[in-house]
Image (cartoon, rainbow, N blue to C red):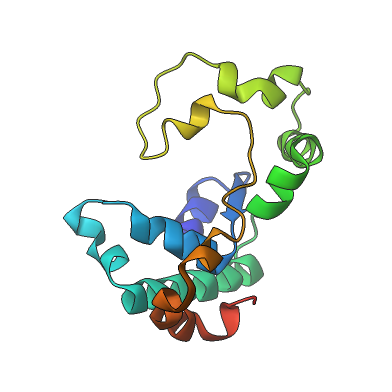
Length: 149
């Protein structure tokens, strides 16, 4: 939808959350999403969908005149304050230390990772895919050059 967003909201700012493709896809594979997202139940399809997402995001970054801020997951969990300050600066708003204490919020959360929102940042999900060994070979093959071994 970035082309459409660029047309109707030319001053929009986009946050692109990125994660290692193997970790991202493994996480999606482990969740029981709705049937509408059935591609995540097949490692090969999941890798193919991820490659298309990656191709599309690289395309939009070149052709859409929007400000896009990358938020790499691995860098964020390694140094939350630096990445959070960069994000807040991207939006041009004043820094608030509460950004570092997001897990203390009492707001309602309705996502598959709702329990994680209540925890401080942790790094145990970085390279988690390596725990599954050869079982993820179909995903590796489907992701092809996007796999960072």
